[in-house]
Amino acid sequence: MKPTRTLLSILLLLAIATGAYLLSSRYFRSEEVTRAEGRLSLYRSTVVAELNRFSHLTFVLSQDPIVLATAQGADTDTLDARLAEFAAEAGLDAIYLMTPEGLTISASNAGAEGSFVGQNYGFRPYFREALAGGQGRFYGIGATTGLPGYFIADPVIGADGTVQGVIAIKLDLSDLEQSWREGGEQVLLANADGVVLLASDPEWRYRTLAPLQAGQRAAIRDARQFSGQTLDLLDWQSDGTGRARIGGDEVIHLTGHDLPHGWELHYFASLGPVTTRSWLATVLALVIAGGIGVLVLLRRNRLIRAALNRSEAEEAALRLANDRLAVEIEDRRTAERRLERTRDELARASRLAALGEIAASVTHELGQPITAMRNHLAAAELGGGAGVLPNLTGLVERMEGITRQLKFFSSPGQDRLGPVDLRDAVQEALNLVAPNMDGVALDTDMPDRPVMVQGNKLRIEQVLTNILRNALDAMEGARDPALSVTLGSDGGTAWVETADRGHGLGEASLSDLTEPFVTSRASGQGMGLGLAISAGIVKEHHGVMRAWNRSGGGAVFRVEIPLAEPAQAAAE
Image (cartoon, rainbow, N blue to C red; front, side):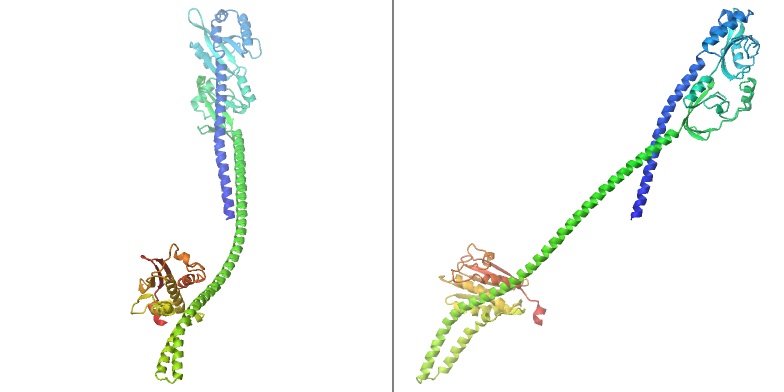
């Protein structure tokens, strides 16, 4: 995972570097092009201004009377001096007057070495153009001096309208080259044939931008325009899209076309500054991206550390919570064990309390048969023993039935579950409370077939006994006490319902009455444990105990226990 992330980071940095270089290169190149266009426009204006600066001078001189007189045969000394003065003041290379045949008869450099006087320039194009009546212009290497220059000529016309001669000037344009070199520029000026006339690099001068045709070379040779020059091809290439390669260097290439004579001014701007600035921008972008990456990593590390701290804190809290939970679980288990012991103790206490009450009732019930036995025995001792034995047997059976009812309360109970017929449990509970039912109208409704549940018979009998005893206690002192007991089953549930005509539940609810030590009986007549224990026993049997006030007075208690599965009951 880590090498992949590193590779992705490297690829991302490469993408950022490439994008930054391309964008910055495009931007800086556009800036350089804009600057080059400005420089090209300036240099073009300079060239045009230089070519046109003295364009009027030859016309003015052609109208000069001295020039006209000299052309018509006057002495040349006066004109030589005059032309020399003009040339010096204007900074011209030469001013000279030629006859219609092209012979120079007067010049500003007369008497000097290399003087034009006596030279015939009838072959020059500028001379022929002026002789034809127009202004002639021409750039070439001087036939006499061997120095290049720009020639301008106008015809000298006499009073009769005929051409008496041609007056011409020669301009030195080398100052333009000098200014280009001093400005550190790469500039060249080419004529219509593509021959470089002026250049910031002397090596480019008199080179051609494209191969010359045979006709072009013949015209150049006839005009002696570039005498002694081979006019080799310049080492350059242009793609026509603003880029060129010259001298092995790739440069920005701009061309100015709107110049006299169809000339072109070529401006070359180096891509070095563009490349340098683009690399600087790329490095800056990488530094910024790296800085952002470092910030992101630092923030990520802070988040990771914070998450780790939170995780450690949560882990510590979880360990503490687990420790507390373990303690609470152990405490709860201990409490559950104590609760179980307390429930067992309460059950025993309930049985003992019931045993005390039943003992008093049994004592009362046993009193009559015991008295009767005493009377029969006394009669037997007096000699009247006939028929005593059957009477005694009946009394003993009655006493045995009464004492048999005490076995439930004397037994500690068992937890084993088994099939229990609720009819038997109801009957046993009724037998236990029978001694307390004097004067109570009992109505029972039980089905003929067994109603089987899975449970503990003695504990179910304890529940029913507590409910019956509570019903009898509630009707104590009632005018017309009556108790109904109904047993039935429906929907997989068996139920036993008792209804009495006692004082009812009042404002209390079943949840109130099933609280331990809560009782509605008079102080000293009960501990309030019967219903609490009964509710717990019913819950253990997965059942429900309900209670509500009966319309017309009294209360109804209902115990619901799930029916036993037939197969399970048969197996038991």
